[in-house]
Length: 202
Image 1 (tube, helix red, strand yellow):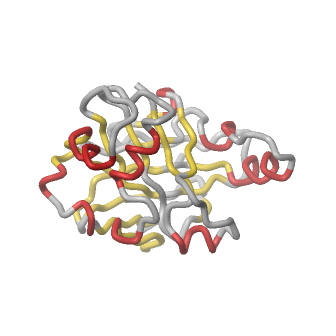
Image 2 (tube, rainbow, N blue to C red; image 1 turned 180 degrees about the horizontal axis):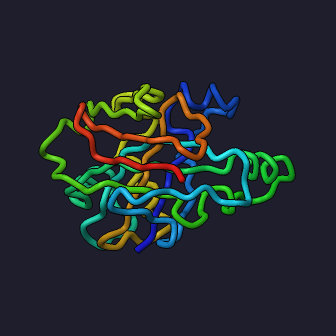
């Protein structure tokens, strides 16, 4: 399986990082070694001094497909969950300043904690509220109705370049409010007020 992630998909997050608004989805990939499951602790890596949280709705692909038409994209996922795209912001900024790829800032070990998944029919996925708390304080609050590119647009676009396979995960972008973590922090992620993810930072 692979993890496909979408950047710059919420306008306010684009503004807070002073990025340009994209004309098409910004895509990057994390390896399966980035996964962190079962609410396991995230251990702060020694190679960065500025790890940031980015909470995102995650789709789980349920069948193989490529060049998927947007009108059929809904057939390619049945479940949604929530995840955190941990980002080494200092490494990312260094790489961007030199015009280099920034996988080391996004795809490192355990940089993708994920929750359990539930049926997409449990919610209105086009108007899905999600949030992240850091030490009990809400830091991020988003709604899928504010995405620049919808779930179906993302699936159609990504499948032009990568064959999607059953079990693949798609991180669909983060809203505004990203920020740094420190050892001892406690992160909690919610979908429609229900806690899905609980990650201690060690």
